Image 1 (tube, one colour):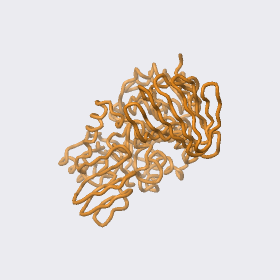
Image 2 (image 1 turned 30 degrees about the vertical axis):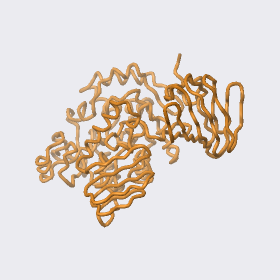
Image 3 (image 1 turned 180 degrees about the vertical axis):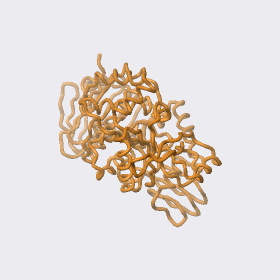
Image 4 (image 1 turned 90 degrees about the vertical axis):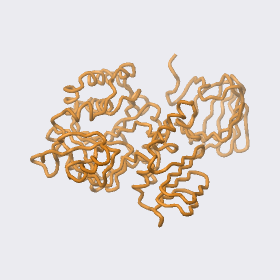
Length: 473
């Protein structure tokens, strides 16, 4: 059995923590591990093969670094040139997994789901495997504990013969209103649609050919010329861009007569909102609050308070969400957190960076934190990991001062090569080719002061880059 981890998506409903450049699957929201790391870690005792991880190109180094941190071996980091929903993504994974003539059973998992009861989850995997071996397309149906209107539902049909657990799918149902959802839950015949699946690679491709032949042909053409770039697997972007955008539910599962459902009661949540993080939190105080970070509460009940850096003080409120990051604060009623997407859309429309980036931005070589800025200057704290190097580059509109705070910096500054240590500095004029490298064994920390008429990140001309970020001429 080969897990396929879907790690795309922007997670805008968890803004300001989750942003386009660092979405929720790469954040530590429910444990000390990130949600991607948790997803793979809970498979440890289930005897599966190395996972295939699918992500978009912009997040490739985040995925690679988070797998490296946990010592996770993978079966390929498959890059989508652009998002085309789950059906094409899974098709690429199925085709990639079948390249050597193999036909593995694929376990399709989202990278951003919470599952509290891993043994129960492993039990459901075993039950689903028996069905997948019978050429069934299995979905995992969550046993509902409330009349939730934010999930689609699956109605079970007859029990599948020859297995201990499993039902034919009678039909899939869109997100209902509250009264209808309550009827579904009371009937005992409906499950929440989890978005997790299991089937043979060949069986999925067979059903995709039957119901979405154009999609399959495009995915075949895109992956026919797949190439490896470091540890990443790339497909033909010019071909893949023509692929229809469709979910596996609409493209296959709602049409096939081979769909069946395995019930799962394992403390599952798609962590789709701040209120769901409050609901699933294991620890609440005496007033039913979830408090993370530095906070002082007085007369506050049933609330979620999350402080990243500064002290949060909340007085006399009920059912609220307060989330603080280095550059933004969210205050919302728990019943209105789904409307956070409206804030994100407004930020995006106004071309504000907060919809996409945090103040601290992660790169394959380390990170930078924009700690101050003005009309013609910007100050960053830069961290370079041991042994890493930024691209050889130049800028048309800005000069830079670098002051080493700790560690050792190897600096290329025009035709000079400098070795700088703590409290030493250098100046890089506009138009001078330069590079920064950490040759040491500890992290390099430096302060960068930029000055000039334009300070945007797109004022970078790269001449060479070990991470493949130089555009072909």
